[in-house]
Image (cartoon, rainbow, N blue to C red; front, side, top):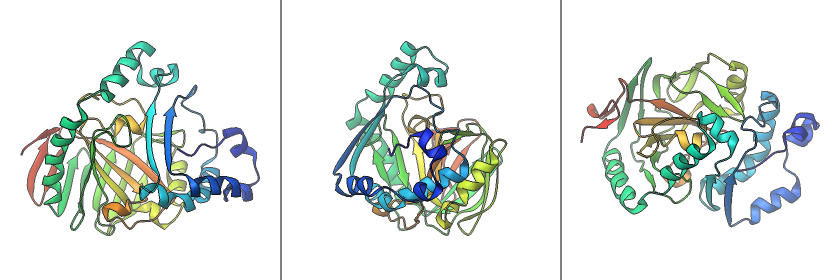
Length: 300
């Protein structure tokens, strides 16, 4: 939601990149609400900015992140069906528009009730275990509660999300089904190994320098800030935008970086990168040793 002109970011002196201009800082300090319509002409804008420069830009944004993640700034974001987004989805513009509106124009009161039942089951659990292709990861939600996204911020909505206990993640997760999209980069085959909540090994099949530079942004970038459960039955495929892909029914997503204080999260970082994991083909979610989801189908 914070735009940077790519041409300027690629050429400006580094000392200007790492600090917000005073007028922009004042804008974000005074802002009460933010309405964002994403309508890119080129979905790869920003990919030409080096990983090191993107890290400096994230450093500059750090002071305004707390107001956003604490919901002090009310916001809503949605996409407009541009040809660029349609091409990313592998669709015509008209077909993509139907896909977009089908994911957004739902009975959100009914959807909220359905997702609340899912949230209640996770709220009652302490340990979550995610099992899938080259994936066996556990973490704790003890003392944490979930938020149901039923059209209050992101649109399309359709997720239940948490901030896991910061030192609890252990095991391996591989995001082999979908790339991780961040800062205009498409990173294929991301794999993390966690110990005591921290990523101790990280690799990817492409753009690994960008991945490792992002993880090195600050200490919090190597911890989980979010665990989310995709619940939107109107989204059955990914097209490379986290706003959509993290809502795919039968998937989960993990975000490295900043957690949500209003959900009990304490992890601080200039990074918040959502990466989607497919569970509809051989995946499982276990809650306190009890199977809760298999192949994307709930077991309760």
